[in-house]
Image: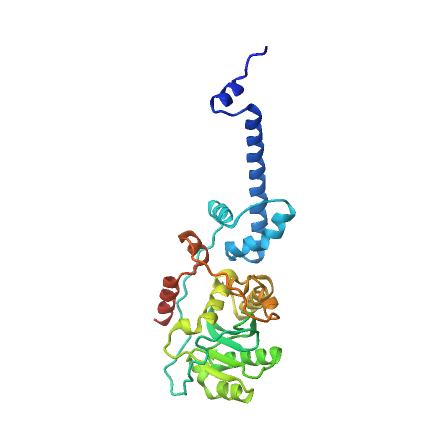
Length: 310
């Protein structure tokens, strides 16, 4: 009879066999290899989507996990990103782009409690700033509220109405105008001026505006601005207008074609644009850690909007 090894004795003290110890060691080694593989895949995705949130990264990596037989839940995925410093923190915004102190007519809000069952029923618009070393330039966006697809945009050197009007013309040219289409915006002078309003009327697009200066009345447009800045580096300072323009082109393409959106059943906006019927929303209450990752909580949105008005 051979004497028991030290390893066998120790395992016996804890109620385990030596084989169980070896199996545990193998599993631990496999988990480590899986985590190294996952982190590598995250870094590959982050090369293209440098500030994409953890939930969307997890969704995009699910087919890769299944192909390699890896079972890795969302919460565990968040913890792994946190441990390796790969969670994204939200940046703050500050310059003001809305001037509603003008003599033009303001229109009523037509979209309260409106439910959408297809694209081409409601467009929302907004303007945000982009920094360059030579000063600010301004990005006007038109977004389909059903699919969250950006259907028109224009980067313009000033806050004049030309930029907003060019974005609207792009949307009309690309999408056409369905009967009953509503255009919703804030009360900024760019959207209330004669040129913009006359174009909307000429295209037979109904006009809707926020009524109380509340950012939640135009929340979709505000959210799109934040996504482009937070996830696609438009919050950076560019060397000149041309480099900012190229960055916007890339950001809009990636947003429309490669980023799953929580409010359209985690589809890419370009795919959601072709759907019909109500799209499932994946909004859930989040832990503090997840709020740090996504920056989506009511208080922070309110604070950011109040700062933007100062």
